[in-house]
Each structure stands twice: as structure tokens, then as C-alpha cells.
Amino acid sequence: MNENTDIHEHLVCSGSGDRYPVDTRLWRSPAGAYFDLAFTPHFPRDRILDRAPGMWRYREALPFPLHEVPVSFDEGFTPMPRVPIHGHEVYLKQEQLFPSGSYKDRGASMLISHARRIGITHCVEDSSGNAGSAIAAYCARAGISCEIYVPEDTSPSKLAQIRSYGAQLKPVPGNREATAEAVMAAAETSFYASHVWNPYFFHGTKTFAFEVWEQLGFTVPDALILPAGNGTLLIGTAIGFEELYRAGEVPAVPRLYGVQAALCAPLARTATPAPNGDTVAEGIAIARPARGAQILDKIEHSGGGIVTVTEEQISHTLGHLCRQGFFIEPTSAATLAAVPEVLSRPEFANKQPVVVSLCSGHGLKAAEKVEKLVQS
Ligand SMILES: *Cc1c(COP(=O)(O)O)cnc(C)c1O
Image 1 (cartoon, rainbow, N blue to C red):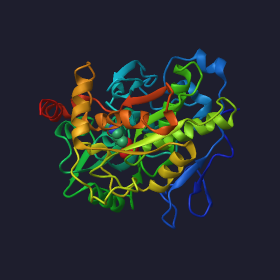
Image 2 (image 1 turned 30 degrees about the horizontal axis):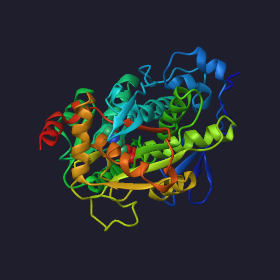
Image 3 (image 1 turned 180 degrees about the vertical axis):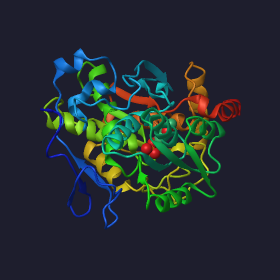
Image 4 (image 1 turned 90 degrees about the vertical axis):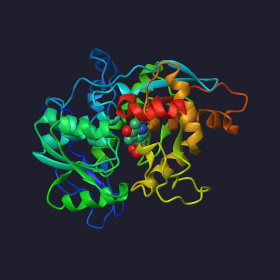
């Protein structure tokens, strides 16, 4: 008897509410809406604490059978030191330390484990670089072949990383949207292991919330400052805290703040529309996020907000972090550049809030670019 197989686990069309089996090859509903996953997690603390520190220690909260072996590098449980950022003390989860160099490995480990379980042997994915690297790494570990579509102007080291894993790299001329269109055509005949559309990816990134909860001594912070491009970490973190809340483990979902580059800020209502502006934060330059409404919904329910940062703030923060020994890619610095603005909001007046943020991607992914920005 497999106690982790939830017989109620199924996909739900976010538009109609119709149910689909978990082994469907569809990546969205026939009406074009994204899927969510209905699944009941459990948090047996004694069992969690018995296991090695890693994202798979929350086995009973992950949609994967207990008796099966996931596609994993024993990743997760990244360190969370306190770091001064522009004068504010923030817990900074070291998500750049994942095997492929970004937190996307959380989602890839969960999604590719699921894909292998339902018999997938070939898949396609599109990305501005890091999700593609993560999917390529986990496909290599799983023995699944993959094609990764990326915008032509993606950082060269990300392209080299994807090719080195043995994935077939498909560079697409034009912007990130052109790449998304190219992969959708390929997805007509291949399994689309999408970090944006496939809900299993979000049930991997939700482990970020579980780890923050555990690393803060099983408590919730007052605020989380997270990137908001396609929202793969933000939505996952919201799902994670919602699950903990429903299980009675935490008193509330913490405030979630989503950070966008001012040059590409479709979720900031006040921003003048900028068509995929040329920001150095390439990882969050998403002009039309497929789950944009869901991101805003999660943020609103948490009592948080959207914050935008300028190119100057991003470069300045990148230098500030590098000079403290944190070598991160420019997209990571964009998130951290928002710290002063979040902490000056009225909800934190006269308070010393517990704030968690992260280094989302490794500096080695764009080393030359980092050096140039830090020196400018
Ligand atoms: C993917 C990524 C982000 C942003 O994630 P979204 O899912 O687009 O919100 C931020 N930083 C890095 C390094 C990333 O790889």
C-alpha cells in the first residue's frame, strides 16, 4: 500500500474547473487555460526531521509516490544567512547553490520525476536560460532526451551549460515571446516540460516555503521578497505557505512582494507599458506572463505588493552584494534591489520585520556581464 498516492490527485483546468488525470500529455486545457494540481499534502514533523536535509525530506507533501525514487541530486535545504542589504538585515536563501545554479532545480526535480513516472522519454522546454539549464540537467539524470528553446541573445554560459548536459539547443531569433511561440509548435508532438504551464513545477518550487518555515524554527517570516517574471518561485512559495496554513502548521501566509524590472513591468499597474524593455535582469523580462493574474491574486491575498526597480538600482545592488562575497547574476540583484522600498512601506512602520529573500541565480552564469555592471 502506497500511502503517498493520493487517489484524489488530479489536474484542474483554471478556467472551467474540469478535471484531468495526472498522466495527461496536455500542457493546457482545450480552452487554453493553465492547469493547477489538486493534491493533499501532509507534514509529519518526526519523519521530516528523520530525513537528510533537502527538498525531498517533505516527501508526504510532494505529489510523488513514497516508494518510488525521484530524479534528484539530493538538492535543497540551501543555507539562509542574515545579510545586510542597503542597511537592512535580511535572511538570504542561497538558491544559487543548486546543481544547475538556480532555484529552478526545485521545480525541475519535481516535474522530471513526475514526467519519468508517467513514461515520458522525450520533452521540450523554453526558457531565458535557467529553467532550460535545470530541465536539461534533470533530463540528463533521468535519461530523458530534451530540446531547449532559448532566445538567441541568452548569456553564452547558459547556452554552453544547456549544450553540455547533452540537450538539443534551439536558439530562436527575437524576444522571449518568439521563443515561447516556437516551443508551443514543438509541443504539438512532444511532452512540454514547461516551468510556466506545468503545475508539477510549482509543487517543486513550493519547497522553498517549507524550508524557510523550518529554518526559521517552524515559524513564518513577516515578508518574502521574490522575483516576479513568470512567478515560478512566487506562486510556488504561495502554494507552499497555503498548504502549511491549511494543514494548521502556520497561523497565516506571509506577505509576498514580487519584484519586476521597471523596464519590463507588466504586473505593476502604475508602470507605463514597456514592450519587453532591455533590462539586465534577463531572467524576469517577461512581457506577458501566462500566469500574471494568478501572481497578482497570490500577492493580493497575502497582503503584499508589486515593486519595480531601475537598472541603476540593479547594478548598484549587484555591486553591493558582490563586495560582500555573494557572486550572483544580475537578475538576482534585481530582487534584492527592492529591499529598501519594501521595508519603507506603511505596513512595516515602526517594526523590525523578519524578511526573507534569496540569491536566485549564480554569478558564473553571466560572469563577464556581472563584472561590467559592477565596474560601471
Ligand atoms: C527564473 C529566474 C527568476 C525569476 O523567475 P520567474 O519564474 O520568471 O518569476 C529570477 N532569478 C533567476 C536567477 C531565475 O533563474
